[in-house]
Image 1 (tube, helix red, strand yellow):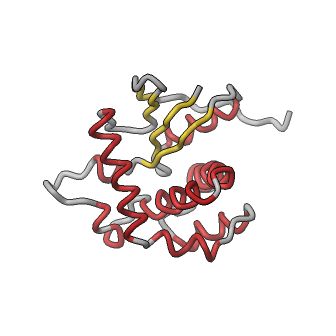
Image 2 (image 1 turned 45 degrees about the horizontal axis):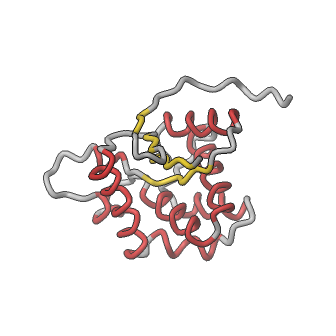
Amino acid sequence: MSLKVYFDFNCPHSYRFRKWFDLADLGIDVDWRGFLLAQAREQRPGWRVFDHADENPSGLAALTAHYWLSQQDPLRADMFHRAVLSARHEQELEVDDPDVLCKIAADHGIDADALRAPMTDQRVVRDVAAIHEDAVMAHGTVGTPTLVGPDGQTLYVRLGAPPEDKGN
């Protein structure tokens, strides 16, 4: 079985879902797709965060880095996904900062220099925007995490904190 999961690195519910998902170890293939909550909450008609990312921290740098990496090396992208969520929600690091993202990447054996350029590459930003817009149009996504099953059915979930890892 495969599942699409729309997430935002800044969303605590996306973080919790990933923790629960990893704990459950269900053997389900997941296509982690970025969804920019800052855009979903935008009130100005016609204004797109994707076109003004340098003006307002929004998580777009992390989403573009993850998307680019997922196109290059899905296994490392999955590792990066987990690490960025952890950095944001456990260590409270600023994942809008390209330097922070590059350090996370380097700490996990990912070429930080190669990852830097895609964060501001307008082609990559357009691809991430298209994924976000498809989530809205095709699935009615308004929040994260939103799960989309193989049959196209969607489910928005909010989970409590997973149990603490006691090293067992």
